[in-house]
Length: 450
Image 1: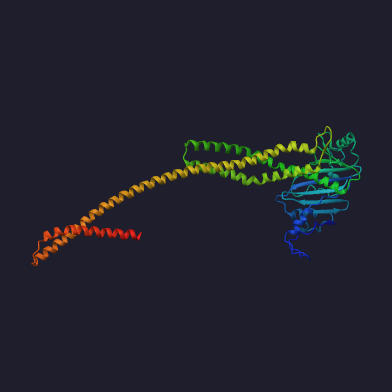
Image 2 (image 1 turned 90 degrees about the horizontal axis):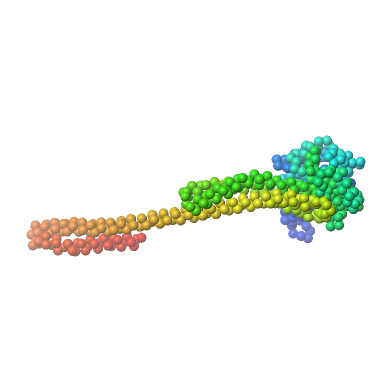
C-alpha cells in the first residue's frame, strides 16, 4: 500500500460556508508546510539514503522506477505531483522526494538482528528489503549515499559509546556530539566514502525516544550532508573562473592605463572594452544561478547544524565544527568569485562610460569647430551676396537708364523738344533709388515669410 501526498494541491478556489472564496493558491501554499513531513522511525532502525541529480530525468522515469517495487504498479504521475511520496511496503518504508536539482530516496527498515554488516567497512545495503539492484538503477547521478544506523542504548558512558561507534565506523578520525540542549541522543560519523560508495552515520538514542524525534534527527543529519555536497558544487566553477577573471582584470587595467595616456584610438579601446564586457556577461549568465544556489544551500547547512544543537564531547570534534572549518573556506572562495565577477562587470561599465564621455567630448569639439567653419562660410556668403546685390542694382539701373535713353531718342525723333542724354542723366538717381527700394521690399517680404 502507499500513503498519498499530504492535502490536495488543487488550484481551484475553495468556497467556505462563512468565508469569501479562497484565492486559487491559498490551499497549496498553506499545505506547503506539510509537504515533506519527517519520517516516523521506530528504533533500532537502518536508513539507507540516496540523493541523485535529476537533470534530464523526468517524473515519468522516476515513476517507472518506483513501479518496480513490489505491489506499486498502480502508481500514477498524479501521485508524484506533490514532489513527495511515502510508500509502505510491509516492514519497511520508502520515501521519494523531488527537489529542483536533485531527488532523494530513503529506505527505512528495522536494523537486522544480529546486524549484518556491523563491520565498519562492510556495506549494509545488502541487508535491504528492497528488490536486488533497485538502488543501483535509480535514475540520475549520485551526489550523496548514506547508511544511517540508529541504535538504542545508554550513551552516558562516553568510553563505551565511543567503542561502539568505532565498531560501526572504523578507526578513522571520528566526529561525534550529543544532540539537543539536554543531550537526548548521540551522533557520530567520519564523513568518509566506503568501498560501497556509502557514507555511514551512527545515532545512539535512549529506548524511550519517540518515533517523531528519531525521524527529525535522521532528516537533519541526512539533509546536512546532502546540502553540504550541493553547496560545494559552486567551488569547481569558482576555480574554473579564476584564470579568466585574472586575465580580464589585467586586460582592463591595461586598457584603463591606455585611456589615461591616450596612446590608442578611442574606437579601438571601445571595441576591446566591449569584448571584455561580453566575456564577463557570458560568465555571469552561465554561473550566476550556481553561485546563488551555493549561497542558499550553505544557509540550509548552517540552519541544520543549528537545529542539531550539538553538545561537544571532550576530545572529539563536533560535526558542526568540522563543517565550519572545512566548508567555510570553500564558501568564501565561491562568494569572493561571485563578488569579483560582479565588481569586474561594474568596473568595465565605468571604464566604458569614461571612454564614451571622452569620445562625446571630442565629438562635441569637432562639431563646434565644424559649426564655426560653417558660420564663417555663411558670413562670407552673405558678404558675397551683398556685393552681388550691389552689382545687380547697378546693372539693373544701367538697363533701365538705357531704356529711358531710347525712349527719349524716340520722343525727339517724333518732334518733341527733348534732349535724350540730359533726360537719361537726370533720371539716373531716381532709377537707382527705385531699384534699391524694390530690392529692399523683396528682402522684407522674404524675412516676413520666415
